[in-house]
Length: 398
Image (cartoon, rainbow, N blue to C red):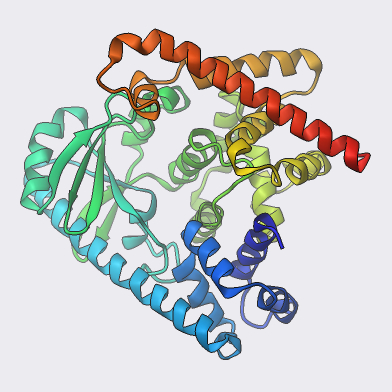
């Protein structure tokens, strides 16, 4: 069984509720897979803690093989313990920032510490903490981070517009824009700040994006920035669903549709909705539930082809999918090919990112040459993924 199929089974299991009819059928499929493969994929998709919790909730724990139960239980305990530490560190950071009059907005997974988006705040795995502050507050914020036991290790400015801190066995990113500069045109930053909501954790006040901005921010971060069109993260799909199920009518879906249409990313949003419905088997809210229905067969065809490509072609497959879903005719295909392959991947890419991936941080004068090399690399991979899909189509006759 290939990885996309296993991911689909895990994602579907996470969406089930006790008593649903197809629990046994889905569990039988998962039982036929090596436990190490399930654990590896669950960990890679940051849902190991949630998976073990769901297995217990569905009454399947007794059906785990002893070795599988031991490994899953251990990983679950590690995940819970890490979240306890993350929560404590976040408490210390926000308390220090509040004392200095610095408004802090928690982003992504940390929101679950204040709003029970998941059933329990221990269930959502996190690698680090992301906190948004104003640019002018950075000098004072650095001192607050040090007071919380975290040391400055470097900045990713202007690529990510953030500074990185480490300590107490974790990493914390301080941002002064909700997304990297490359994507900031998709946001009204002033409105993002103005619409934040006040939340509370253990009696400590802090801020989070409003529910509508949480959904939109997750989409831009996961699908636009990280190009998770094919090789999606299960956790990202769960985040989207858990967030809308928690906030419900507090999310302005018409506003989200307005933004994706205004920024010409509606086609990517439709694909994201299709991924959620396909893998989690859930209905989405009315305004967006039928968005992808007209294109579902097209998505299924290309997902089937591109999800099986070699690992070294994965980035090229994501770019090709991005071009395909945006293009309705040959002229649009040419235009979008230029936008994705040249403009987005090369011309608009930050120098810090290019210097880092080619490991020549100390050779900045070579940057123009590096952009040319990077362009040839992107175009070469694109030709190879086209050749791969053509060979697939000819061999299957589809």
